[in-house]
Length: 298
Figure 1: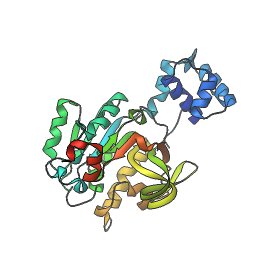
Figure 2: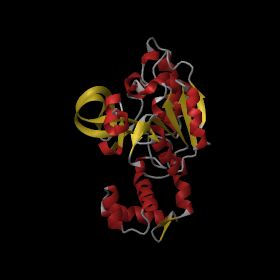
Figure 3: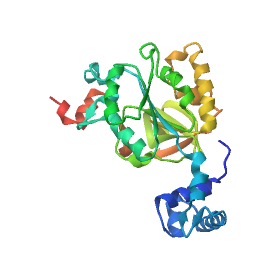
């Protein structure tokens, strides 16, 4: 956790008030799952600090949130997308169109809507095709991954490892339907997950809201969704740990997110951030693509 000038409760109340102006204390309590007494106490404290006035967040309050603002978004987009063959033979998976829109566009639009100005895409397979994004998103910066076909996606994380502080890290092939899950501010490092009774996919075990284990398959767990946020301290630590993991025997075969949860498990306190199955979908196979977009079913 980076050094904080706000308590978690102060942070949660300020964020709620930014999103919901002139609401009652009871509405705040219900909205963030806090007792009415705690809300009253936090409101009193924030008012004394002049962070809120008449239920509105002041410039002082906005400035207090600045250390928690997301500075950049890093997209891991270098892979081949073999399970989506034949469509990926000529098109990188993030650029595949679903119902007329490129998969990555939904994520990029959500990032921009959240006020995140620095956008980095790590590209490799058919890299030049990503240039088409610049017409709509001229602010994008590209990082080239020359080893995308020799190593797993940890090689992309290696290329961008110094960009991970105060940053989102996205798998670039997720089809988003709820842009509100991309937020302007985060109090702590976190990883998106879908609460599920049983999973045969990558999932997280948790304790008190903190991820304790990453594994394939589990019960009463969170199915991993490839969107995470890393605060300043954790992002800097990741930069060193990614390099160390990559240089280990067999390190090139790892996924980048195994670094904090497997290779250096216990050295990070990453919160689980719950989302719903309908918020975001990973299209794994061509068959799934055809089910979502009937124009491919020919």
